[in-house]
Amino acid sequence: MWTIFYTPTFSSPSQSVEYCGTMPNAHQPIDLLANIYLLVYFVIRVLGNEKKLDIVLHSMHSIVDYFTIPGVILSIVLDRYFIGFAFFRAYNCLWIVDLLANRGILRNVNTIQLAHLVLLVISVLMISSGFLHLVENMGDPWLLATSGPYNGQLISFWRCFLYLYGRVTLLDLSGMRIQTMLGRIIIYGFQILALGIVSKAIPQIILRMKVVPQFFDKTYQVPVLSLHLVVCGHVRVGPMTSFLKEFYNEDRELSEYFQIVILDESEPDDAMSRLLELYYNRLDYRRGSVMKSKDLHRVKVMEAEAVLILADRTTSDIDAEDAANIMRVVSIKNYRENARVIVQVLQYQNKAYLQNIPSWCPKHGDVCLCIAELRLGLEARSCLVPGFSTLMANYFTTRSFSEDRKYTGTWMDEYLHGTSLELYSRTFGQAFHGLTFAQACDVFHYCATCHSDFSDLANIKQCKCRHAEGSTLIYESKTSVSTPRSPLLRMLSQRKGTEMESKLWTYMCHYPNA
Image (cartoon, rainbow, N blue to C red; front, side, top):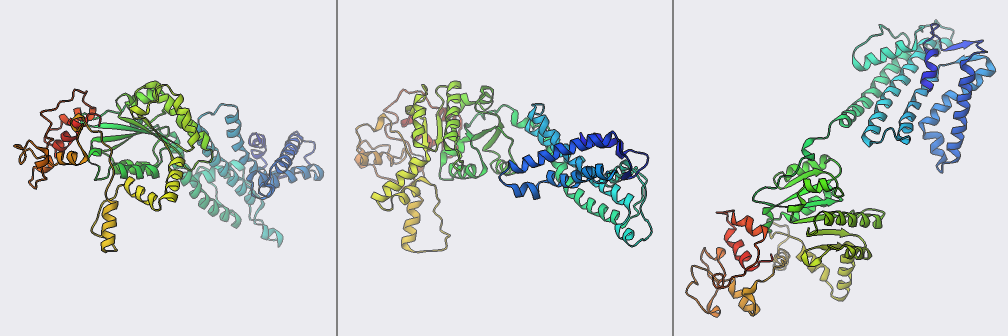
Protein backbone atom coordinates (compact mmCIF):
# COMPACT_ATOMS: atom_id res chain seq x y z
CA MET A 1 0.00 0.00 0.00
CA TRP A 2 2.78 2.44 0.92
CA THR A 3 4.69 1.60 -2.26
CA ILE A 4 1.64 2.56 -4.33
CA PHE A 5 1.12 5.66 -2.16
CA TYR A 6 4.68 6.95 -2.70
CA THR A 7 4.79 6.10 -6.42
CA PRO A 8 3.40 9.48 -7.60
CA THR A 9 5.86 11.31 -5.35
CA PHE A 10 8.83 9.28 -6.59
CA SER A 11 7.71 9.84 -10.18
CA SER A 12 7.50 13.63 -9.74
CA PRO A 13 9.12 15.66 -12.57
CA SER A 14 11.07 17.73 -10.04
CA GLN A 15 13.29 14.72 -9.27
CA SER A 16 14.01 15.89 -5.72
CA VAL A 17 13.98 14.19 -2.32
CA GLU A 18 12.79 17.20 -0.29
CA TYR A 19 10.05 19.74 -0.80
CA CYS A 20 9.60 23.01 1.13
CA GLY A 21 6.34 24.84 1.80
CA THR A 22 4.19 21.99 0.69
CA MET A 23 1.36 22.45 3.20
CA PRO A 24 -1.48 22.02 2.53
CA ASN A 25 -0.82 18.87 0.51
CA ALA A 26 -3.17 15.94 -0.04
CA HIS A 27 -0.40 13.39 0.40
CA GLN A 28 0.95 14.59 3.73
CA PRO A 29 -2.21 14.21 5.91
CA ILE A 30 -2.81 10.71 4.55
CA ASP A 31 0.85 9.83 5.07
CA LEU A 32 0.67 11.23 8.61
CA LEU A 33 -2.40 9.15 9.52
CA ALA A 34 -0.81 6.01 8.09
CA ASN A 35 2.39 6.52 10.06
CA ILE A 36 0.46 7.24 13.28
CA TYR A 37 -1.30 3.91 12.75
CA LEU A 38 2.09 2.22 12.27
CA LEU A 39 3.39 3.93 15.42
CA VAL A 40 0.48 2.53 17.44
CA TYR A 41 1.07 -0.88 15.88
CA PHE A 42 4.76 -0.66 16.85
CA VAL A 43 3.83 0.09 20.48
CA ILE A 44 1.39 -2.85 20.53
CA ARG A 45 4.06 -5.18 19.14
CA VAL A 46 6.54 -4.10 21.81
CA LEU A 47 4.08 -4.36 24.71
CA GLY A 48 2.58 -7.64 23.55
CA ASN A 49 5.86 -9.49 23.07
CA GLU A 50 7.86 -11.05 25.89
CA LYS A 51 11.17 -10.46 24.09
CA LYS A 52 10.88 -6.69 23.87
CA LEU A 53 14.56 -6.16 23.15
CA ASP A 54 14.35 -8.31 20.02
CA ILE A 55 11.38 -6.31 18.76
CA VAL A 56 13.09 -2.97 19.40
CA LEU A 57 16.56 -3.78 18.05
CA HIS A 58 16.42 -6.87 15.83
CA SER A 59 13.10 -6.57 14.01
CA MET A 60 13.42 -5.29 10.45
CA HIS A 61 9.92 -3.80 10.60
CA SER A 62 10.97 -1.75 13.64
CA ILE A 63 14.05 -0.46 11.82
CA VAL A 64 11.81 0.64 8.95
CA ASP A 65 9.63 2.54 11.44
CA TYR A 66 12.69 4.32 12.91
CA PHE A 67 13.62 5.76 9.49
CA THR A 68 10.13 6.71 8.31
CA ILE A 69 7.82 7.70 11.18
CA PRO A 70 9.88 10.59 12.75
CA GLY A 71 10.40 12.32 9.40
CA VAL A 72 6.69 12.27 8.53
CA ILE A 73 5.68 13.69 11.92
CA LEU A 74 8.30 16.47 11.76
CA SER A 75 7.28 17.39 8.22
CA ILE A 76 4.00 18.81 9.54
CA VAL A 77 5.83 21.01 12.05
CA LEU A 78 8.67 22.14 9.79
CA ASP A 79 6.53 22.46 6.64
CA ARG A 80 9.12 20.41 4.78
CA TYR A 81 8.28 17.11 3.09
CA PHE A 82 11.29 14.75 3.00
CA ILE A 83 10.80 11.51 1.05
CA GLY A 84 14.42 10.36 1.13
CA PHE A 85 13.73 7.44 3.49
CA ALA A 86 10.29 6.52 2.18
CA PHE A 87 11.80 3.69 0.14
CA PHE A 88 12.15 1.68 3.37
CA ARG A 89 8.39 1.07 3.22
CA ALA A 90 8.99 -1.33 0.34
CA TYR A 91 9.92 -3.91 2.97
CA ASN A 92 6.31 -3.87 4.17
CA CYS A 93 5.34 -5.60 0.94
CA LEU A 94 6.11 -8.85 2.75
CA TRP A 95 2.94 -8.29 4.78
CA ILE A 96 0.98 -9.03 1.62
CA VAL A 97 1.99 -12.69 1.88
CA ASP A 98 0.80 -12.91 5.49
CA LEU A 99 -2.46 -11.18 4.59
CA LEU A 100 -3.19 -13.51 1.67
CA ALA A 101 -2.27 -16.55 3.74
CA ASN A 102 -4.52 -15.51 6.64
CA ARG A 103 -7.41 -14.86 4.26
CA GLY A 104 -7.00 -18.33 2.80
CA ILE A 105 -6.08 -17.14 -0.69
CA LEU A 106 -2.63 -18.74 -0.48
CA ARG A 107 -3.17 -22.19 1.02
CA ASN A 108 -0.24 -24.19 -0.25
CA VAL A 109 3.02 -23.95 1.71
CA ASN A 110 5.08 -23.96 -1.47
CA THR A 111 3.00 -21.10 -2.90
CA ILE A 112 3.45 -19.04 0.28
CA GLN A 113 7.21 -19.54 0.31
CA LEU A 114 7.46 -18.77 -3.40
CA ALA A 115 5.49 -15.52 -2.99
CA HIS A 116 7.65 -14.54 0.01
CA LEU A 117 10.87 -15.08 -1.97
CA VAL A 118 9.65 -13.08 -4.97
CA LEU A 119 8.52 -10.14 -2.82
CA LEU A 120 11.78 -10.26 -0.83
CA VAL A 121 13.84 -9.89 -4.02
CA ILE A 122 11.63 -7.01 -5.21
CA SER A 123 11.82 -5.28 -1.81
CA VAL A 124 15.62 -5.48 -1.66
CA LEU A 125 15.84 -4.09 -5.19
CA MET A 126 13.53 -1.16 -4.38
CA ILE A 127 15.28 -0.36 -1.08
CA SER A 128 18.67 -0.31 -2.80
CA SER A 129 17.24 1.90 -5.55
CA GLY A 130 15.97 4.28 -2.88
CA PHE A 131 19.42 4.50 -1.29
CA LEU A 132 20.98 5.27 -4.66
CA HIS A 133 18.27 7.84 -5.43
CA LEU A 134 18.92 9.58 -2.11
CA VAL A 135 22.72 9.83 -2.32
CA GLU A 136 22.78 10.80 -6.01
CA ASN A 137 20.34 13.64 -5.44
CA MET A 138 21.95 14.82 -2.18
CA GLY A 139 25.59 14.42 -3.25
CA ASP A 140 28.46 13.36 -1.05
CA PRO A 141 27.81 14.69 2.49
CA TRP A 142 31.48 15.48 3.25
CA LEU A 143 31.61 17.88 0.30
CA LEU A 144 28.49 19.67 1.52
CA ALA A 145 29.94 19.95 5.03
CA THR A 146 33.08 21.71 3.73
CA SER A 147 31.13 23.95 1.30
CA GLY A 148 32.64 21.99 -1.57
CA PRO A 149 31.19 21.60 -5.04
CA TYR A 150 27.94 19.73 -5.53
CA ASN A 151 28.73 16.43 -7.25
CA GLY A 152 25.23 14.96 -7.27
CA GLN A 153 22.66 14.77 -10.03
CA LEU A 154 18.89 15.17 -10.17
CA ILE A 155 17.54 11.79 -11.23
CA SER A 156 14.26 9.99 -10.67
CA PHE A 157 13.72 6.96 -8.50
CA TRP A 158 12.72 4.72 -11.40
CA ARG A 159 15.89 5.54 -13.29
CA CYS A 160 17.86 4.29 -10.30
CA PHE A 161 15.62 1.24 -10.22
CA LEU A 162 16.37 0.46 -13.87
CA TYR A 163 20.09 0.98 -13.25
CA LEU A 164 20.21 -1.54 -10.39
CA TYR A 165 17.98 -3.91 -12.32
CA GLY A 166 20.53 -3.74 -15.12
CA ARG A 167 23.37 -4.49 -12.69
CA VAL A 168 21.57 -7.69 -11.70
CA THR A 169 20.42 -8.82 -15.14
CA LEU A 170 23.43 -7.38 -17.06
CA LEU A 171 20.94 -5.41 -19.19
CA ASP A 172 21.26 -1.68 -18.43
CA LEU A 173 18.26 0.29 -19.69
CA SER A 174 18.81 3.51 -17.75
CA GLY A 175 21.84 5.06 -19.50
CA MET A 176 22.86 6.42 -16.11
CA ARG A 177 26.34 7.14 -14.72
CA ILE A 178 27.13 7.24 -11.00
CA GLN A 179 28.80 10.54 -9.95
CA THR A 180 29.04 10.35 -6.14
CA MET A 181 31.54 8.32 -4.16
CA LEU A 182 28.84 7.20 -1.74
CA GLY A 183 26.75 6.02 -4.69
CA ARG A 184 29.60 3.81 -5.90
CA ILE A 185 29.94 2.33 -2.41
CA ILE A 186 26.21 1.57 -2.40
CA ILE A 187 26.52 -0.11 -5.81
CA TYR A 188 29.38 -2.32 -4.65
CA GLY A 189 27.53 -3.23 -1.47
CA PHE A 190 24.36 -3.93 -3.42
CA GLN A 191 26.20 -6.25 -5.79
CA ILE A 192 27.59 -8.26 -2.89
CA LEU A 193 24.17 -8.36 -1.21
CA ALA A 194 22.40 -9.25 -4.45
CA LEU A 195 24.92 -11.98 -5.18
CA GLY A 196 24.08 -13.62 -1.86
CA ILE A 197 20.31 -13.09 -1.92
CA VAL A 198 19.68 -13.88 -5.56
CA SER A 199 21.92 -16.94 -5.56
CA LYS A 200 20.00 -18.22 -2.55
CA ALA A 201 16.55 -17.20 -3.77
CA ILE A 202 16.67 -18.37 -7.39
CA PRO A 203 17.29 -22.08 -6.62
CA GLN A 204 14.48 -22.00 -4.06
CA ILE A 205 12.15 -20.30 -6.53
CA ILE A 206 12.95 -22.90 -9.17
CA LEU A 207 12.49 -25.64 -6.60
CA ARG A 208 9.08 -24.28 -5.59
CA MET A 209 7.97 -23.84 -9.18
CA LYS A 210 9.25 -27.23 -10.23
CA VAL A 211 6.63 -29.86 -10.87
CA VAL A 212 6.75 -32.80 -8.49
CA PRO A 213 8.57 -35.68 -10.21
CA GLN A 214 6.01 -38.06 -11.58
CA PHE A 215 8.18 -41.02 -10.60
CA PHE A 216 7.27 -40.71 -6.91
CA ASP A 217 3.55 -40.61 -7.77
CA LYS A 218 3.55 -43.72 -9.91
CA THR A 219 2.14 -47.06 -8.82
CA TYR A 220 4.72 -49.44 -7.39
CA GLN A 221 5.29 -52.50 -9.54
CA VAL A 222 6.03 -55.59 -7.47
CA PRO A 223 8.85 -57.66 -9.00
CA VAL A 224 7.81 -61.15 -10.08
CA LEU A 225 10.37 -63.01 -7.98
CA SER A 226 10.42 -60.75 -4.92
CA LEU A 227 8.27 -59.79 -1.95
CA HIS A 228 7.99 -56.31 -0.50
CA LEU A 229 7.49 -54.48 2.79
CA VAL A 230 5.91 -51.05 3.22
CA VAL A 231 7.54 -48.60 5.67
CA CYS A 232 5.65 -45.47 6.72
CA GLY A 233 5.25 -43.13 9.68
CA HIS A 234 8.26 -41.10 10.81
CA VAL A 235 10.59 -42.06 7.97
CA ARG A 236 13.96 -40.34 8.33
CA VAL A 237 17.42 -41.11 7.03
CA GLY A 238 18.98 -42.04 10.39
CA PRO A 239 16.47 -44.71 11.49
CA MET A 240 16.12 -46.01 7.93
CA THR A 241 19.88 -46.42 7.56
CA SER A 242 20.07 -48.49 10.74
CA PHE A 243 17.04 -50.54 9.69
CA LEU A 244 18.43 -51.27 6.23
CA LYS A 245 21.85 -52.26 7.56
CA GLU A 246 20.22 -54.67 10.00
CA PHE A 247 17.63 -56.03 7.59
CA TYR A 248 20.02 -56.57 4.68
CA ASN A 249 22.86 -57.94 6.76
CA GLU A 250 24.80 -60.63 4.94
CA ASP A 251 23.90 -63.15 7.65
CA ARG A 252 20.19 -62.80 6.92
CA GLU A 253 19.88 -65.00 3.88
CA LEU A 254 16.14 -64.54 3.31
CA SER A 255 16.35 -60.74 3.20
CA GLU A 256 17.66 -60.74 -0.34
CA TYR A 257 14.22 -61.82 -1.56
CA PHE A 258 12.52 -58.75 -0.08
CA GLN A 259 12.23 -55.17 -1.29
CA ILE A 260 11.24 -52.18 0.85
CA VAL A 261 8.86 -49.41 -0.23
CA ILE A 262 8.81 -46.12 1.72
CA LEU A 263 5.49 -44.24 1.78
CA ASP A 264 5.83 -40.65 2.98
CA GLU A 265 3.91 -37.42 2.37
CA SER A 266 6.96 -35.35 1.39
CA GLU A 267 9.46 -35.70 -1.40
CA PRO A 268 12.82 -37.30 -0.57
CA ASP A 269 15.45 -34.79 0.48
CA ASP A 270 19.11 -34.93 -0.50
CA ALA A 271 20.06 -37.36 2.27
CA MET A 272 17.15 -39.67 1.43
CA SER A 273 18.04 -39.50 -2.27
CA ARG A 274 21.57 -40.66 -1.47
CA LEU A 275 20.13 -43.53 0.57
CA LEU A 276 17.90 -44.50 -2.36
CA GLU A 277 20.93 -44.54 -4.63
CA LEU A 278 22.84 -46.70 -2.15
CA TYR A 279 20.03 -49.30 -2.04
CA TYR A 280 18.75 -48.65 -5.56
CA ASN A 281 17.84 -52.31 -6.22
CA ARG A 282 16.24 -52.92 -2.80
CA LEU A 283 14.65 -49.64 -1.72
CA ASP A 284 11.86 -47.68 -3.41
CA TYR A 285 10.09 -44.43 -2.52
CA ARG A 286 6.53 -43.29 -3.12
CA ARG A 287 4.96 -39.97 -2.14
CA GLY A 288 1.60 -40.31 -0.43
CA SER A 289 -0.28 -40.74 2.83
CA VAL A 290 -1.22 -43.90 4.69
CA MET A 291 -4.58 -42.31 5.45
CA LYS A 292 -5.59 -42.38 1.76
CA SER A 293 -6.76 -45.60 0.14
CA LYS A 294 -5.47 -44.61 -3.28
CA ASP A 295 -1.93 -44.26 -1.90
CA LEU A 296 -2.20 -47.63 -0.17
CA HIS A 297 -3.26 -49.08 -3.51
CA ARG A 298 -0.27 -47.47 -5.22
CA VAL A 299 2.21 -49.22 -2.91
CA LYS A 300 0.37 -52.56 -3.20
CA VAL A 301 -0.54 -53.03 0.46
CA MET A 302 -2.83 -55.87 -0.62
CA GLU A 303 0.24 -57.82 -1.74
CA ALA A 304 2.69 -56.63 0.93
CA GLU A 305 4.06 -59.11 3.44
CA ALA A 306 3.96 -56.52 6.22
CA VAL A 307 3.56 -52.80 6.92
CA LEU A 308 6.05 -51.21 9.31
CA ILE A 309 5.03 -47.96 11.05
CA LEU A 310 7.92 -46.03 12.63
CA ALA A 311 7.60 -43.56 15.51
CA ASP A 312 9.49 -40.34 16.20
CA ARG A 313 11.42 -41.00 19.40
CA THR A 314 12.57 -37.37 19.65
CA THR A 315 9.11 -35.80 19.63
CA SER A 316 7.98 -33.57 22.49
CA ASP A 317 4.32 -34.67 22.25
CA ILE A 318 4.45 -38.43 22.82
CA ASP A 319 0.70 -38.98 23.02
CA ALA A 320 0.11 -37.18 19.72
CA GLU A 321 2.77 -39.31 18.02
CA ASP A 322 1.21 -42.54 19.32
CA ALA A 323 -2.26 -41.34 18.30
CA ALA A 324 -1.03 -40.66 14.77
CA ASN A 325 0.49 -44.14 14.49
CA ILE A 326 -2.68 -45.78 15.84
CA MET A 327 -4.73 -43.92 13.22
CA ARG A 328 -2.35 -45.23 10.56
CA VAL A 329 -3.02 -48.76 11.81
CA VAL A 330 -6.78 -48.14 11.57
CA SER A 331 -6.41 -46.88 8.00
CA ILE A 332 -4.36 -49.91 6.95
CA LYS A 333 -6.72 -52.38 8.63
CA ASN A 334 -9.73 -50.72 7.00
CA TYR A 335 -8.06 -51.15 3.63
CA ARG A 336 -6.92 -54.73 4.26
CA GLU A 337 -8.11 -56.58 7.33
CA ASN A 338 -5.51 -59.36 7.24
CA ALA A 339 -2.57 -57.03 6.66
CA ARG A 340 0.34 -57.73 8.98
CA VAL A 341 1.17 -54.49 10.82
CA ILE A 342 4.25 -53.82 12.94
CA VAL A 343 3.86 -50.50 14.73
CA GLN A 344 6.03 -48.56 17.16
CA VAL A 345 4.50 -46.72 20.11
CA LEU A 346 6.28 -44.65 22.73
CA GLN A 347 4.03 -45.15 25.78
CA TYR A 348 2.96 -48.50 27.22
CA GLN A 349 -0.59 -47.39 28.06
CA ASN A 350 -1.26 -46.52 24.42
CA LYS A 351 -0.94 -50.18 23.43
CA ALA A 352 -4.44 -50.78 24.83
CA TYR A 353 -6.00 -48.71 22.04
CA LEU A 354 -4.80 -51.22 19.47
CA GLN A 355 -6.86 -53.95 21.10
CA ASN A 356 -10.00 -51.96 20.23
CA ILE A 357 -9.32 -52.40 16.51
CA PRO A 358 -11.48 -55.38 15.43
CA SER A 359 -9.01 -56.70 12.85
CA TRP A 360 -5.97 -56.39 15.13
CA CYS A 361 -4.75 -59.96 15.68
CA PRO A 362 -1.34 -60.74 17.22
CA LYS A 363 -1.81 -64.41 16.25
CA HIS A 364 -1.65 -63.41 12.59
CA GLY A 365 1.58 -61.48 13.03
CA ASP A 366 0.45 -58.04 14.21
CA VAL A 367 3.08 -56.65 16.56
CA CYS A 368 3.16 -53.55 18.74
CA LEU A 369 6.67 -52.50 19.78
CA CYS A 370 6.77 -50.21 22.80
CA ILE A 371 10.16 -48.57 23.09
CA ALA A 372 9.68 -47.49 26.70
CA GLU A 373 8.51 -50.97 27.69
CA LEU A 374 11.53 -52.63 26.08
CA ARG A 375 13.96 -50.22 27.69
CA LEU A 376 12.48 -50.48 31.17
CA GLY A 377 12.13 -54.25 30.83
CA LEU A 378 15.81 -54.65 30.00
CA GLU A 379 16.77 -52.40 32.89
CA ALA A 380 14.60 -54.40 35.30
CA ARG A 381 16.08 -57.71 34.13
CA SER A 382 19.58 -56.29 34.42
CA CYS A 383 18.88 -55.49 38.07
CA LEU A 384 17.97 -59.14 38.70
CA VAL A 385 20.58 -60.63 36.37
CA PRO A 386 23.61 -58.37 35.82
CA GLY A 387 24.70 -58.38 32.19
CA PHE A 388 21.31 -59.51 30.87
CA SER A 389 20.78 -56.35 28.77
CA THR A 390 24.23 -56.73 27.18
CA LEU A 391 23.52 -60.37 26.35
CA MET A 392 20.16 -59.58 24.77
CA ALA A 393 21.58 -56.62 22.86
CA ASN A 394 24.24 -58.88 21.38
CA TYR A 395 21.58 -61.39 20.36
CA PHE A 396 19.16 -58.87 18.88
CA THR A 397 21.73 -57.06 16.73
CA THR A 398 23.51 -58.56 13.76
CA ARG A 399 27.30 -58.51 13.79
CA SER A 400 29.82 -60.27 11.64
CA PHE A 401 32.83 -62.03 13.12
CA SER A 402 35.90 -60.43 11.58
CA GLU A 403 39.49 -61.49 11.98
CA ASP A 404 40.75 -57.94 11.44
CA ARG A 405 40.47 -56.12 14.74
CA LYS A 406 42.56 -53.90 16.94
CA TYR A 407 42.58 -56.01 20.12
CA THR A 408 43.29 -59.73 20.20
CA GLY A 409 43.17 -62.42 22.84
CA THR A 410 41.41 -65.65 23.69
CA TRP A 411 38.69 -63.96 25.69
CA MET A 412 38.19 -61.38 22.94
CA ASP A 413 37.86 -64.11 20.31
CA GLU A 414 35.30 -65.97 22.38
CA TYR A 415 33.34 -62.81 23.15
CA LEU A 416 33.26 -61.61 19.54
CA HIS A 417 32.33 -65.08 18.34
CA GLY A 418 29.46 -65.10 20.81
CA THR A 419 28.23 -61.67 19.74
CA SER A 420 28.22 -62.79 16.10
CA LEU A 421 25.65 -65.51 16.90
CA GLU A 422 21.99 -64.68 16.45
CA LEU A 423 18.53 -65.84 17.51
CA TYR A 424 15.93 -66.84 14.93
CA SER A 425 12.35 -67.95 15.51
CA ARG A 426 11.11 -70.92 13.47
CA THR A 427 7.93 -72.98 13.75
CA PHE A 428 8.49 -76.75 13.64
CA GLY A 429 6.32 -78.77 11.28
CA GLN A 430 4.51 -82.03 12.06
CA ALA A 431 7.60 -84.05 11.13
CA PHE A 432 9.20 -82.98 14.43
CA HIS A 433 6.28 -83.91 16.69
CA GLY A 434 7.39 -86.34 19.40
CA LEU A 435 11.12 -85.81 18.85
CA THR A 436 13.46 -84.70 21.59
CA PHE A 437 15.81 -81.77 21.13
CA ALA A 438 18.74 -84.12 20.44
CA GLN A 439 16.73 -86.08 17.88
CA ALA A 440 15.62 -82.88 16.15
CA CYS A 441 19.25 -81.81 15.91
CA ASP A 442 20.19 -85.16 14.37
CA VAL A 443 17.59 -84.66 11.67
CA PHE A 444 19.43 -81.59 10.43
CA HIS A 445 22.54 -83.72 9.86
CA TYR A 446 20.76 -85.88 7.32
CA CYS A 447 22.44 -85.94 3.89
CA ALA A 448 20.61 -87.47 0.92
CA THR A 449 23.92 -88.73 -0.52
CA CYS A 450 25.58 -90.21 2.60
CA HIS A 451 22.54 -91.23 4.69
CA SER A 452 20.09 -92.55 2.10
CA ASP A 453 20.31 -96.11 3.47
CA PHE A 454 19.84 -95.12 7.13
CA SER A 455 16.54 -95.84 8.84
CA ASP A 456 17.45 -95.14 12.45
CA LEU A 457 17.86 -91.53 13.50
CA ALA A 458 20.38 -92.48 16.19
CA ASN A 459 22.88 -93.61 13.55
CA ILE A 460 22.85 -90.34 11.61
CA LYS A 461 25.89 -88.16 12.20
CA GLN A 462 26.96 -84.98 10.45
CA CYS A 463 28.97 -85.75 7.33
CA LYS A 464 31.61 -83.57 5.70
CA CYS A 465 30.75 -83.99 2.05
CA ARG A 466 29.87 -81.03 -0.18
CA HIS A 467 26.20 -82.10 -0.27
CA ALA A 468 25.73 -81.55 3.45
CA GLU A 469 24.81 -77.88 2.96
CA GLY A 470 22.01 -78.81 0.58
CA SER A 471 20.62 -81.71 2.57
CA THR A 472 16.93 -82.56 2.90
CA LEU A 473 15.06 -83.89 5.88
CA ILE A 474 14.66 -87.64 6.35
CA TYR A 475 10.88 -87.52 6.65
CA GLU A 476 10.37 -85.34 3.60
CA SER A 477 9.05 -88.18 1.44
CA LYS A 478 7.25 -89.99 4.26
CA THR A 479 5.45 -87.08 5.86
CA SER A 480 3.30 -84.68 3.91
CA VAL A 481 1.64 -81.63 5.34
CA SER A 482 -1.34 -80.33 3.40
CA THR A 483 -1.09 -76.61 4.06
CA PRO A 484 -1.31 -73.67 1.65
CA ARG A 485 2.10 -72.73 0.31
CA SER A 486 3.34 -69.38 1.57
CA PRO A 487 4.12 -66.55 -0.89
CA LEU A 488 7.81 -66.95 -0.14
CA LEU A 489 7.63 -70.68 -0.93
CA ARG A 490 5.77 -70.03 -4.18
CA MET A 491 8.31 -67.43 -5.15
CA LEU A 492 11.25 -69.72 -4.36
CA SER A 493 9.77 -72.54 -6.41
CA GLN A 494 10.18 -70.32 -9.48
CA ARG A 495 13.83 -69.57 -8.78
CA LYS A 496 15.57 -72.59 -10.21
CA GLY A 497 19.29 -72.90 -9.95
CA THR A 498 19.78 -70.54 -7.03
CA GLU A 499 22.42 -71.34 -4.47
CA MET A 500 20.11 -71.32 -1.45
CA GLU A 501 17.13 -73.07 -3.02
CA SER A 502 17.78 -76.53 -1.61
CA LYS A 503 18.45 -75.15 1.85
CA LEU A 504 15.28 -73.05 1.77
CA TRP A 505 13.26 -76.04 0.60
CA THR A 506 14.56 -77.89 3.66
CA TYR A 507 12.98 -75.25 5.88
CA MET A 508 9.82 -74.58 3.93
CA CYS A 509 8.69 -78.19 3.42
CA HIS A 510 8.58 -78.80 7.16
CA TYR A 511 8.01 -75.25 8.46
CA PRO A 512 4.79 -74.42 6.62
CA ASN A 513 4.06 -71.42 8.85
CA ALA A 514 7.44 -69.78 8.23
